[in-house]
Image (cartoon, rainbow, N blue to C red; front, side, top):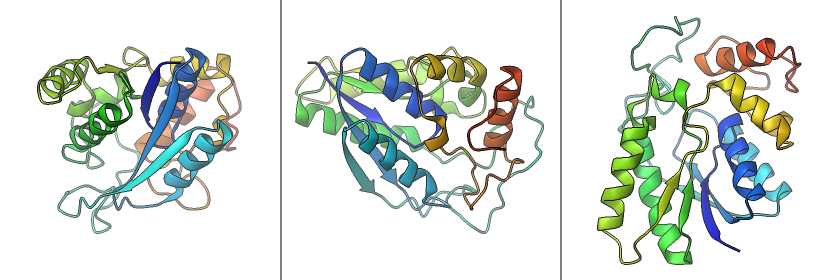
Length: 216
């Protein structure tokens, strides 16, 4: 069975990517990051999804205290009711986050003999986040392989050309437990329904004429 590393955040995208990789027979190790983000709910969701699938997981704690992002600095408000069609990098962007995450993933993959790293980056993300673009992932893969002993590790981004609606459709086919996922940037007991992530999720389920198991 081929080994793989999955970057698991606890959201819809990474959960669907996990089920995609699992269906293809990969023996996965989940890498979950505690980077002092605004809330820990997504970490717990990621842990539960890994446990449900009996997948080994590692929670890696790192400190991105310098990041001027609303996800790491509570003094910066999470944007709400933003124009989702506006092409700008939002305040939820964490500088170099995927560069850091993928660097850890390559180190882990090389250490355990894995040749694939799965990430849930996709179209709606890279419209606002530069480190989710396909050209970034391709370039990073090339650079990382130049700097490691065991060559040939690939970054697999199966959702890269999909929007949230298509990701949920795929997830339904793969039997992803969306009720265990968390999308809201604010955390809390219930989703805020106003941040970008909540709104993309709400819009996608509505377009599919489905009820979100989180009961927005």
